[in-house]
Image (tube, rainbow, N blue to C red; front, side):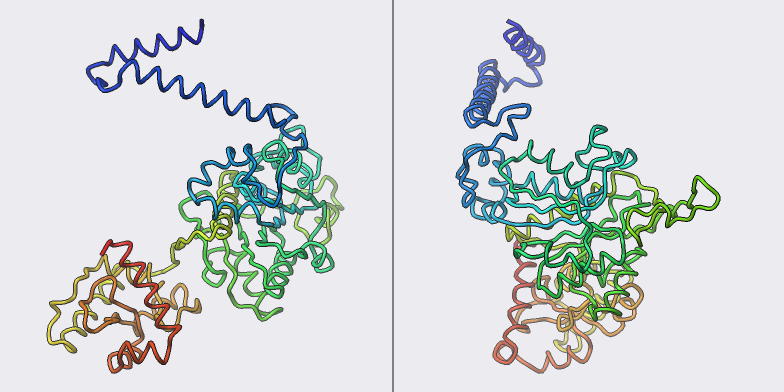
Length: 459
């Protein structure tokens, strides 16, 4: 009776607003309610018949084909939205993946949680630390009942209620060089570095590079407040982050690694500093409070939302990589509008010099910004490494210009490449057929980039 009364009230509300919502009929409302109830009943029955409805039943062991998790009705229903987004075959790549997450605090717990909810089939969760009361402001799933328990065990417990078909291994363990083989063996499809200790982080990243493992690293999330400044880029491009700076220095100095590692970081300068150490006794030192030698005990103030967003960004990046879903991260290009105006003016001058007129220049300053920033990332098409960042990038603009890729076509967004002056001169004296024959990889790369512009501008 109560359900019927709610339906009648809804119909009355529709009738009362008939002038504004005339297209919404009473029949349509009843049909919608009926479909929703049928769907709700279907899902409830599906869970109950498969031993996975409510309470602790969600963690009951179920017989599933681990070689094809999506063939299971419950799993397929749970991942419906992902399947609709990626397609079945791409989602299958995710459910067949093995991901290692090291460091399960504010960043790592949210990253691991969304990897699980996205259907990753196997997770190895690693952290030596325990859930503390003060960490509840940023942890993905921990409750007060979990305080004092290992973070790895806490996640496994909660995760088994969300997606029990996932194979989860929880290790209460500190990552260090002696644990490399134990933790990184098994050919993981991705490793997430969510560690905030420099020594351990550098050791892990170097090991992943040496083993040829794909890794995504989180830089400093503490003491920040602006979610709009969070980026994914190569480690060599990260700026305004003391942790990134230290990691870059150590990787280059100790391991000869200068880049090639994607990181999540914030362009925002830290808004707060480490809090001073305060012992309970006068003779105590910070080392007296270390859980593990070498780990900091001073506290970084943390707004819980920022590490959570870091973790969500990491999960999104990894899941799309696993699914082979192509997208372009926003380039870190430190140029202002005056730089783009200069490049546009240079293009006009070059066209007049080479072709006798600038009439076929079909781009304005805003489109030059797209070409330089989005397509060529502020660097010559022939030199797409990340060595010039910050003010160095400003100086590099002084030797760059836009030229047509195909001289027989107008200078529009899908036919302009960024080159150094000397490279532009060489390009003008060559043909596309020559480039294709002599530099097939470069030709293919440029063609791919310009095709992207053609697609995005619907040319």
